Image 1 (cartoon, rainbow, N blue to C red):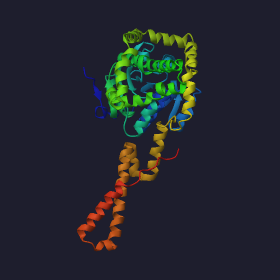
Image 2: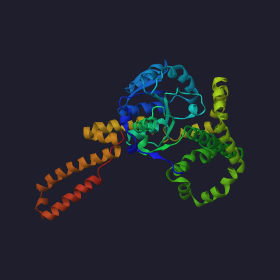
Image 3: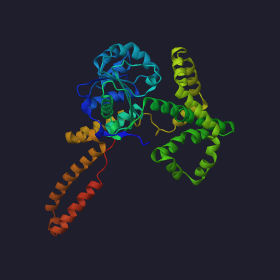
Image 4: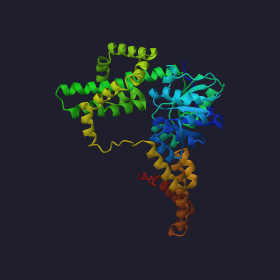
Length: 422
């Protein structure tokens, strides 16, 4: 069955008119949601724990910061984007006591609702808008006038308008520009956890590390093993991201493609797929969810932190740090929202108010506006020069042709604006 996908035309920001929105948390997702809502004209405030280090960052961006309890008390719509393991505690202590009938609580991941760590009162809507990207990318593409895809789910529709309000929220943060897929809390949670564990985080990390160890144990230089098993992974994934597995196979050598077909199934065989099924069963039955919550509530992350330390000190990390120091073109934060915002501010300074409007809609539109202005200005100046020079003595037809040809060339050869300094 084909998925139902909603776009800008299907969402109405008027559903948020007069509504007060609170974003609980100011991490990766929280900062992007808050700033995008603010730039979309929504009445937003940020709820943070007392003494949070994020308070100064949020206030510096012009956001109003309150305690979690006060933010929840003021708001009609409450988006909870603190870490999964903290949500139920924050909810029970600061949000639930301040809910009133007609409010809506929202999530960017269905973990706590699906596994019943949070159970909202009967008169409160429960919905989800889950951007399919890290928060910095969500913010960056919003500033560029585009957006990232998202997921929509409604767990409880007490008001009869939960879906419409959630879609409006998705539009306000930019997701409906790319498309919002309708799903359920169960489907989003289970596919997300399985994907993280079996493929995106657990699966690929274990595969890379095992490949690295195999080469090093066979006597190859760790540096060579790092490049072959980790560094070049990005190159391959970028090709998959752009055009799927078929485009990756088209782009690599015939030798590599043949090895893909013959050796891939030897690594990911029936035994591995059976292990994946067991992982999915643990996710669907809630075994993993309760194991993770127990790790936080009972063991206070002792095992988690020990595993993190062991992974951080692995040889592949040591070698990787050394090699990345030799590659200055690899910079953390090269595609973050801060870089995009510097670009927007620079465009606004050099281009005037009409271009500021274009820049907020799309950086590409802004560039076209600049080119049109440049073209008109150059054309007027060239016409003036031509009429006062010897070229004006040419036939009118030739002079006109020469002016228009040079005007077009001036647009083609107009230099691109340089990226502003940080």
